[in-house]
Length: 264
Image (cartoon, rainbow, N blue to C red; front, side, top):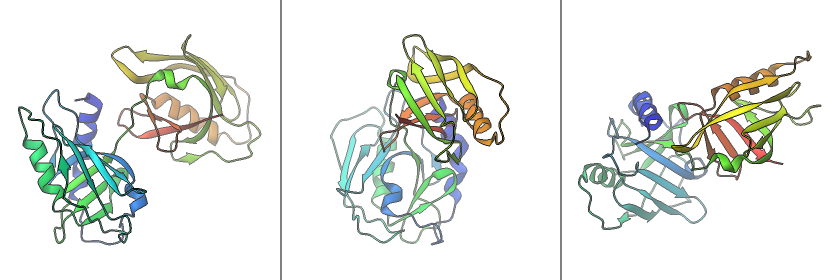
């Protein structure tokens, strides 16, 4: 299993202790749309058998389809997309029939999914799947980063968001980054100053990327908040992933989204 994902699961395990009793953070069907790693089952961090895929579940809010992987077999099923916020009605899940050396994680996931009745938003952007009356989440889900490669960065990208800052529209100098994947160089604007530099990849991990050698011009600007946030985000980047809306996401070591890029 990916070392970053293991660290992320261990660091976020306490989120599963959140109560399922409150209705203040009820999740809607739109909130759960997409793919999610299953990082915790009944309070225990998920550690899959080496060599097996990390378990995840996906929700398609248009078709009502549920899909995913239990760590051994593929999952498939459906859910009620018209359910009220906070309610989640899963139909009985089906799986493929492959046998694996250790089926414990899969059996625990299938047992837990059969008990799900509620869904809530909890810490760090995670989702809790809860039973009808249980106070503790049955399953804790962390947004899955769709696979992408550094080669996908080729070209000119507008910076739409850095850390938690949405880039304002109509800026005099629109923040952007242009990547040349043949030379591993980048050029752009952080919101005021030009930025130039190189990036580092990892031959063993096609989605790994970092920016240790980015420099900027030194022009003074009336408001440097956007620029400082963009540069801070670039410095934290460790990997790349596709986003549901077709944009590209750059993530830090913990798997948190720090830059959102949109193709110009």
